[in-house]
Image (cartoon, rainbow, N blue to C red; front, side, top):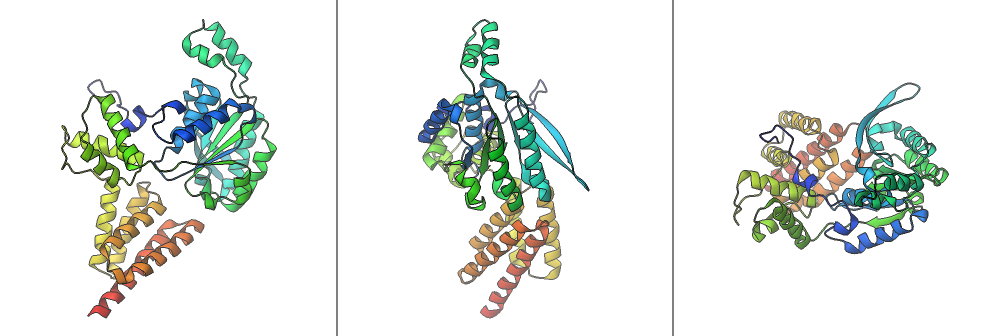
Amino acid sequence: RINSHYSIMPLWVDKHRPKQLKDLDFHHDLSAQLQRMVQGSGDFPHTLIYGPSGAGKKTRVMALLRELHGPSVERLRVEQRTFKFNTSSVELTMVSSPHHIELNPSDAGIRDREVVQEVIKEIAQSAPVIAAGQGAAAAAAGGANEGASDAKPRAAFKVVVLNEVERLSKPAQHALRRTMEKYVATCRLLLCCVNPSKVIAPIRSRCVCLRVAAPSHEEVVQVLEKCCHKEGLKLNHTLAMKISNQCERNLRRAILALEACKVHQYPFTENQSVQLPDWQLFVHALSNDILSEQSPKQLLKIRGKLYELLANCIPPDLIMKSLTQDLLRKMPPGIKHETIHNAAQYEVRMQGGSKPIFHLEACVAKFMQIYKKHMMQQI
Protein backbone atom coordinates (compact mmCIF):
# COMPACT_ATOMS: atom_id res chain seq x y z
CA ARG A 1 0.00 0.00 0.00
CA ILE A 2 1.43 3.34 -1.10
CA ASN A 3 0.45 6.83 -0.01
CA SER A 4 0.60 10.08 -1.97
CA HIS A 5 4.35 10.43 -1.31
CA TYR A 6 4.99 6.94 -2.75
CA SER A 7 6.29 5.56 0.55
CA ILE A 8 5.29 2.11 1.71
CA MET A 9 2.74 2.20 4.54
CA PRO A 10 3.42 -0.43 7.23
CA LEU A 11 0.70 -2.88 8.15
CA TRP A 12 -0.98 -2.36 11.51
CA VAL A 13 0.28 -5.73 12.73
CA ASP A 14 3.87 -4.42 12.41
CA LYS A 15 3.19 -0.77 13.16
CA HIS A 16 1.56 -1.42 16.56
CA ARG A 17 3.67 -4.41 17.65
CA PRO A 18 4.86 -3.96 21.29
CA LYS A 19 8.63 -3.70 21.62
CA GLN A 20 9.09 -4.28 25.36
CA LEU A 21 7.90 -7.02 27.70
CA LYS A 22 6.09 -4.52 29.92
CA ASP A 23 4.03 -3.29 26.93
CA LEU A 24 2.55 -6.69 26.06
CA ASP A 25 -1.23 -6.71 26.41
CA PHE A 26 -1.84 -10.25 27.74
CA HIS A 27 -0.10 -13.14 29.53
CA HIS A 28 1.47 -10.76 32.06
CA ASP A 29 2.66 -13.69 34.23
CA LEU A 30 4.69 -15.00 31.29
CA SER A 31 6.17 -11.55 30.70
CA ALA A 32 7.15 -11.38 34.37
CA GLN A 33 8.84 -14.78 34.13
CA LEU A 34 10.83 -13.68 31.06
CA GLN A 35 11.80 -10.48 32.90
CA ARG A 36 13.20 -12.54 35.78
CA MET A 37 15.18 -14.65 33.31
CA VAL A 38 16.67 -11.50 31.80
CA GLN A 39 17.69 -10.11 35.20
CA GLY A 40 19.77 -13.23 35.76
CA SER A 41 21.12 -13.15 32.21
CA GLY A 42 24.41 -14.67 33.31
CA ASP A 43 22.53 -17.94 33.78
CA PHE A 44 20.09 -17.40 30.90
CA PRO A 45 19.10 -20.88 29.65
CA HIS A 46 18.18 -22.25 26.26
CA THR A 47 14.46 -21.60 25.84
CA LEU A 48 11.68 -23.38 23.94
CA ILE A 49 8.67 -21.14 23.27
CA TYR A 50 5.62 -22.93 21.90
CA GLY A 51 1.99 -22.12 21.22
CA PRO A 52 -0.55 -21.73 18.41
CA SER A 53 -0.03 -19.44 15.45
CA GLY A 54 -0.87 -15.79 16.14
CA ALA A 55 -0.50 -16.08 19.93
CA GLY A 56 2.47 -13.69 20.13
CA LYS A 57 5.54 -15.95 20.18
CA LYS A 58 7.57 -13.83 17.75
CA THR A 59 6.61 -10.59 19.53
CA ARG A 60 7.79 -11.99 22.85
CA VAL A 61 11.03 -13.26 21.34
CA MET A 62 11.87 -9.81 19.92
CA ALA A 63 10.93 -8.12 23.22
CA LEU A 64 13.13 -10.61 25.06
CA LEU A 65 16.07 -9.90 22.73
CA ARG A 66 15.62 -6.17 23.30
CA GLU A 67 15.72 -6.72 27.06
CA LEU A 68 18.88 -8.80 26.72
CA HIS A 69 20.85 -6.66 24.26
CA GLY A 70 19.11 -3.29 24.02
CA PRO A 71 17.63 -1.46 21.02
CA SER A 72 20.53 -2.47 18.75
CA VAL A 73 18.80 -5.81 18.06
CA GLU A 74 16.33 -3.84 15.92
CA ARG A 75 19.07 -3.00 13.42
CA LEU A 76 18.09 -5.95 11.29
CA ARG A 77 19.43 -7.01 7.94
CA VAL A 78 18.10 -9.73 5.65
CA GLU A 79 20.65 -11.81 3.82
CA GLN A 80 20.70 -14.83 1.53
CA ARG A 81 23.20 -17.43 2.64
CA THR A 82 24.36 -20.31 0.47
CA PHE A 83 25.64 -23.43 2.20
CA LYS A 84 27.74 -25.64 -0.05
CA PHE A 85 28.07 -29.36 0.53
CA ASN A 86 29.82 -32.12 -1.38
CA THR A 87 27.18 -32.68 -4.04
CA SER A 88 24.73 -29.81 -3.61
CA SER A 89 24.13 -26.37 -2.13
CA VAL A 90 21.28 -24.91 -0.06
CA GLU A 91 20.20 -21.26 -0.04
CA LEU A 92 18.51 -19.89 3.09
CA THR A 93 17.11 -16.49 4.05
CA MET A 94 18.36 -15.21 7.41
CA VAL A 95 17.52 -12.18 9.55
CA SER A 96 20.37 -10.99 11.74
CA SER A 97 21.55 -8.18 13.99
CA PRO A 98 24.86 -7.61 15.83
CA HIS A 99 23.56 -9.81 18.65
CA HIS A 100 21.41 -12.52 17.11
CA ILE A 101 20.55 -14.48 14.01
CA GLU A 102 17.15 -15.87 13.04
CA LEU A 103 16.43 -18.57 10.49
CA ASN A 104 14.13 -21.44 9.61
CA PRO A 105 16.43 -24.46 9.19
CA SER A 106 13.60 -26.74 8.01
CA ASP A 107 13.68 -24.82 4.69
CA ALA A 108 16.92 -26.65 3.95
CA GLY A 109 15.06 -29.95 3.56
CA ILE A 110 17.22 -33.03 4.02
CA ARG A 111 20.28 -30.81 4.61
CA ASP A 112 18.86 -29.24 7.78
CA ARG A 113 21.34 -31.09 10.02
CA GLU A 114 24.40 -29.59 8.31
CA VAL A 115 22.84 -26.12 8.23
CA VAL A 116 22.06 -26.18 11.97
CA GLN A 117 25.58 -27.22 12.88
CA GLU A 118 27.23 -24.72 10.53
CA VAL A 119 25.19 -21.68 11.61
CA ILE A 120 25.50 -22.28 15.35
CA LYS A 121 29.21 -23.04 15.05
CA GLU A 122 29.78 -19.83 13.08
CA ILE A 123 27.90 -17.51 15.43
CA ALA A 124 29.30 -19.15 18.56
CA GLN A 125 32.92 -18.79 17.43
CA SER A 126 32.61 -15.06 16.67
CA ALA A 127 33.27 -12.72 19.58
CA PRO A 128 30.12 -11.55 21.41
CA VAL A 129 29.48 -7.86 21.99
CA ILE A 130 30.65 -7.30 25.56
CA ALA A 131 28.75 -5.11 27.97
CA ALA A 132 31.76 -2.91 28.78
CA GLY A 133 32.02 -1.72 25.20
CA GLN A 134 28.35 -0.82 25.16
CA GLY A 135 28.65 1.17 28.37
CA ALA A 136 31.63 3.14 27.06
CA ALA A 137 29.80 3.94 23.82
CA ALA A 138 26.75 5.12 25.75
CA ALA A 139 28.86 7.37 27.99
CA ALA A 140 30.55 8.91 24.95
CA ALA A 141 27.13 9.69 23.47
CA GLY A 142 26.54 12.27 26.19
CA GLY A 143 24.23 10.39 28.53
CA ALA A 144 21.12 10.51 26.39
CA ASN A 145 18.12 8.51 27.60
CA GLU A 146 18.52 5.84 24.97
CA GLY A 147 22.21 5.63 25.66
CA ALA A 148 21.56 5.41 29.37
CA SER A 149 19.40 2.36 28.81
CA ASP A 150 22.26 0.80 26.83
CA ALA A 151 24.75 1.59 29.62
CA LYS A 152 23.42 -1.13 31.91
CA PRO A 153 25.17 -4.51 31.61
CA ARG A 154 24.05 -6.55 28.65
CA ALA A 155 24.22 -10.28 28.07
CA ALA A 156 27.69 -11.39 26.94
CA PHE A 157 26.41 -14.05 24.54
CA LYS A 158 24.74 -14.19 21.16
CA VAL A 159 21.35 -15.69 20.44
CA VAL A 160 20.23 -18.04 17.68
CA VAL A 161 16.47 -18.02 17.00
CA LEU A 162 15.24 -21.17 15.24
CA ASN A 163 11.67 -21.17 13.92
CA GLU A 164 9.49 -24.23 13.28
CA VAL A 165 11.78 -26.54 15.22
CA GLU A 166 9.19 -29.33 15.12
CA ARG A 167 9.70 -29.61 11.35
CA LEU A 168 13.38 -30.49 11.73
CA SER A 169 14.34 -34.06 10.89
CA LYS A 170 15.32 -36.38 13.72
CA PRO A 171 19.05 -36.35 12.75
CA ALA A 172 18.96 -32.53 12.75
CA GLN A 173 17.34 -32.46 16.19
CA HIS A 174 19.97 -34.84 17.61
CA ALA A 175 22.73 -32.71 16.05
CA LEU A 176 21.11 -29.64 17.60
CA ARG A 177 21.20 -31.30 21.02
CA ARG A 178 24.94 -31.93 20.78
CA THR A 179 25.67 -28.47 19.37
CA MET A 180 23.71 -26.57 22.02
CA GLU A 181 25.76 -28.30 24.73
CA LYS A 182 29.10 -27.62 23.04
CA TYR A 183 28.67 -23.85 22.53
CA VAL A 184 26.61 -22.96 25.60
CA ALA A 185 29.31 -20.57 26.88
CA THR A 186 28.97 -18.07 24.01
CA CYS A 187 25.63 -18.88 22.44
CA ARG A 188 22.02 -19.37 23.58
CA LEU A 189 19.16 -20.86 21.59
CA LEU A 190 15.57 -19.59 21.39
CA LEU A 191 13.47 -22.32 19.78
CA CYS A 192 9.96 -21.56 18.49
CA CYS A 193 7.39 -24.15 17.52
CA VAL A 194 3.67 -24.86 17.47
CA ASN A 195 3.66 -28.51 18.58
CA PRO A 196 6.34 -29.37 21.18
CA SER A 197 5.48 -33.08 21.08
CA LYS A 198 7.34 -33.30 17.75
CA VAL A 199 10.52 -32.02 19.42
CA ILE A 200 12.66 -34.83 20.84
CA ALA A 201 12.77 -35.20 24.62
CA PRO A 202 16.55 -34.53 24.96
CA ILE A 203 16.09 -31.04 23.49
CA ARG A 204 13.05 -30.28 25.65
CA SER A 205 14.94 -31.39 28.76
CA ARG A 206 17.77 -28.94 28.01
CA CYS A 207 15.44 -25.95 27.58
CA VAL A 208 13.10 -23.91 29.71
CA CYS A 209 9.73 -24.63 28.05
CA LEU A 210 7.32 -21.68 27.95
CA ARG A 211 3.81 -21.98 26.56
CA VAL A 212 2.26 -18.94 24.89
CA ALA A 213 -1.46 -19.70 24.81
CA ALA A 214 -3.84 -18.08 22.35
CA PRO A 215 -5.41 -14.91 23.77
CA SER A 216 -9.04 -15.03 24.86
CA HIS A 217 -11.73 -13.34 22.78
CA GLU A 218 -11.87 -10.47 25.28
CA GLU A 219 -8.10 -9.95 25.04
CA VAL A 220 -8.26 -9.95 21.23
CA VAL A 221 -11.03 -7.34 21.36
CA GLN A 222 -8.95 -5.17 23.72
CA VAL A 223 -5.96 -5.28 21.35
CA LEU A 224 -8.16 -4.41 18.35
CA GLU A 225 -9.69 -1.47 20.23
CA LYS A 226 -6.21 -0.30 21.21
CA CYS A 227 -5.06 -0.40 17.57
CA CYS A 228 -8.10 1.62 16.48
CA HIS A 229 -7.49 4.16 19.25
CA LYS A 230 -3.92 4.68 18.01
CA GLU A 231 -5.23 5.12 14.47
CA GLY A 232 -7.91 7.58 15.59
CA LEU A 233 -10.77 5.23 14.70
CA LYS A 234 -13.88 4.14 16.58
CA LEU A 235 -14.45 0.37 16.69
CA ASN A 236 -17.79 -1.25 17.42
CA HIS A 237 -17.52 -3.93 20.15
CA THR A 238 -19.85 -6.29 18.27
CA LEU A 239 -17.71 -6.11 15.12
CA ALA A 240 -14.53 -6.65 17.16
CA MET A 241 -16.00 -9.80 18.72
CA LYS A 242 -17.10 -11.01 15.27
CA ILE A 243 -13.54 -10.57 13.97
CA SER A 244 -12.14 -12.48 16.95
CA ASN A 245 -14.55 -15.40 16.39
CA GLN A 246 -13.90 -15.42 12.65
CA CYS A 247 -10.12 -15.50 13.16
CA GLU A 248 -10.28 -18.20 15.89
CA ARG A 249 -8.32 -16.08 18.43
CA ASN A 250 -5.40 -15.70 16.03
CA LEU A 251 -4.28 -12.17 16.89
CA ARG A 252 -2.23 -11.61 13.74
CA ARG A 253 -5.14 -12.60 11.50
CA ALA A 254 -7.52 -10.50 13.61
CA ILE A 255 -5.46 -7.30 13.16
CA LEU A 256 -5.09 -7.96 9.43
CA ALA A 257 -8.85 -8.57 9.17
CA LEU A 258 -9.56 -5.34 11.07
CA GLU A 259 -7.40 -3.35 8.66
CA ALA A 260 -9.15 -5.02 5.71
CA CYS A 261 -12.54 -4.08 7.19
CA LYS A 262 -11.41 -0.47 7.55
CA VAL A 263 -10.32 -0.36 3.90
CA HIS A 264 -13.60 -1.95 2.80
CA GLN A 265 -15.96 0.21 4.87
CA TYR A 266 -15.59 2.96 7.47
CA PRO A 267 -17.31 4.00 9.76
CA PHE A 268 -17.68 0.48 11.10
CA THR A 269 -21.15 -1.06 11.52
CA GLU A 270 -22.36 -4.01 13.61
CA ASN A 271 -23.53 -6.07 10.63
CA GLN A 272 -20.40 -5.41 8.56
CA SER A 273 -18.94 -8.54 6.98
CA VAL A 274 -15.41 -9.66 7.89
CA GLN A 275 -13.14 -10.03 4.88
CA LEU A 276 -11.55 -13.48 4.59
CA PRO A 277 -8.11 -14.01 3.03
CA ASP A 278 -8.16 -15.00 -0.64
CA TRP A 279 -6.63 -18.40 0.06
CA GLN A 280 -9.44 -19.27 2.48
CA LEU A 281 -12.06 -18.37 -0.13
CA PHE A 282 -10.12 -20.51 -2.59
CA VAL A 283 -10.21 -23.48 -0.18
CA HIS A 284 -13.98 -23.02 0.30
CA ALA A 285 -14.45 -23.20 -3.47
CA LEU A 286 -12.19 -26.25 -3.58
CA SER A 287 -14.33 -28.12 -1.04
CA ASN A 288 -17.45 -27.31 -3.08
CA ASP A 289 -15.77 -28.78 -6.16
CA ILE A 290 -14.98 -31.98 -4.26
CA LEU A 291 -18.59 -32.38 -3.11
CA SER A 292 -20.11 -31.52 -6.48
CA GLU A 293 -18.45 -34.30 -8.49
CA GLN A 294 -16.25 -37.32 -7.77
CA SER A 295 -14.44 -38.37 -10.94
CA PRO A 296 -10.89 -38.60 -12.37
CA LYS A 297 -11.59 -35.50 -14.46
CA GLN A 298 -12.59 -33.53 -11.37
CA LEU A 299 -9.56 -34.82 -9.46
CA LEU A 300 -7.28 -33.54 -12.24
CA LYS A 301 -8.94 -30.12 -11.97
CA ILE A 302 -8.48 -30.11 -8.18
CA ARG A 303 -4.80 -31.04 -8.59
CA GLY A 304 -4.25 -27.80 -10.52
CA LYS A 305 -5.90 -25.80 -7.75
CA LEU A 306 -3.75 -27.50 -5.11
CA TYR A 307 -0.66 -26.61 -7.15
CA GLU A 308 -1.86 -22.99 -7.25
CA LEU A 309 -2.19 -22.87 -3.44
CA LEU A 310 1.30 -24.34 -2.98
CA ALA A 311 2.75 -21.95 -5.57
CA ASN A 312 1.39 -19.02 -3.53
CA CYS A 313 3.33 -20.21 -0.45
CA ILE A 314 0.36 -21.58 1.51
CA PRO A 315 1.82 -24.26 3.84
CA PRO A 316 0.64 -27.77 2.89
CA ASP A 317 -0.33 -28.66 6.46
CA LEU A 318 -2.52 -25.52 6.60
CA ILE A 319 -4.17 -26.53 3.31
CA MET A 320 -4.86 -30.00 4.69
CA LYS A 321 -6.30 -28.64 7.94
CA SER A 322 -8.46 -25.93 6.37
CA LEU A 323 -9.80 -28.21 3.63
CA THR A 324 -10.69 -30.95 6.14
CA GLN A 325 -12.45 -28.49 8.47
CA ASP A 326 -14.43 -27.03 5.58
CA LEU A 327 -15.45 -30.48 4.36
CA LEU A 328 -16.53 -31.55 7.85
CA ARG A 329 -18.96 -28.63 7.99
CA LYS A 330 -20.62 -29.68 4.72
CA MET A 331 -20.64 -33.50 4.80
CA PRO A 332 -23.13 -35.99 6.33
CA PRO A 333 -22.46 -36.97 9.96
CA GLY A 334 -22.05 -40.65 9.08
CA ILE A 335 -18.66 -40.25 7.39
CA LYS A 336 -17.08 -37.53 9.53
CA HIS A 337 -15.12 -39.98 11.69
CA GLU A 338 -13.68 -41.78 8.65
CA THR A 339 -12.77 -38.46 7.03
CA ILE A 340 -10.86 -37.25 10.10
CA HIS A 341 -8.98 -40.58 10.29
CA ASN A 342 -8.14 -40.32 6.60
CA ALA A 343 -6.85 -36.72 6.89
CA ALA A 344 -4.73 -37.55 9.95
CA GLN A 345 -3.17 -40.52 8.16
CA TYR A 346 -2.17 -38.51 5.09
CA GLU A 347 -0.91 -35.60 7.20
CA VAL A 348 1.56 -37.91 8.94
CA ARG A 349 2.71 -39.25 5.59
CA MET A 350 3.07 -35.71 4.24
CA GLN A 351 5.33 -34.71 7.16
CA GLY A 352 7.70 -37.58 6.34
CA GLY A 353 7.60 -37.09 2.57
CA SER A 354 9.21 -34.57 0.26
CA LYS A 355 6.36 -33.80 -2.20
CA PRO A 356 3.23 -32.48 -0.42
CA ILE A 357 1.15 -32.48 -3.61
CA PHE A 358 1.19 -36.31 -3.71
CA HIS A 359 -0.32 -36.61 -0.23
CA LEU A 360 -2.80 -33.76 -0.66
CA GLU A 361 -4.11 -35.26 -3.90
CA ALA A 362 -4.24 -38.76 -2.40
CA CYS A 363 -6.22 -37.40 0.57
CA VAL A 364 -8.73 -35.74 -1.79
CA ALA A 365 -9.05 -38.92 -3.87
CA LYS A 366 -9.66 -40.99 -0.74
CA PHE A 367 -12.32 -38.58 0.46
CA MET A 368 -14.01 -38.70 -2.94
CA GLN A 369 -14.15 -42.47 -2.63
CA ILE A 370 -15.63 -42.28 0.89
CA TYR A 371 -18.19 -39.63 -0.06
CA LYS A 372 -19.32 -41.34 -3.29
CA LYS A 373 -19.66 -44.71 -1.54
CA HIS A 374 -21.81 -43.10 1.14
CA MET A 375 -24.03 -41.37 -1.42
CA MET A 376 -24.49 -44.59 -3.40
CA GLN A 377 -25.65 -46.37 -0.23
CA GLN A 378 -28.28 -43.67 0.33
CA ILE A 379 -29.88 -44.34 -3.06
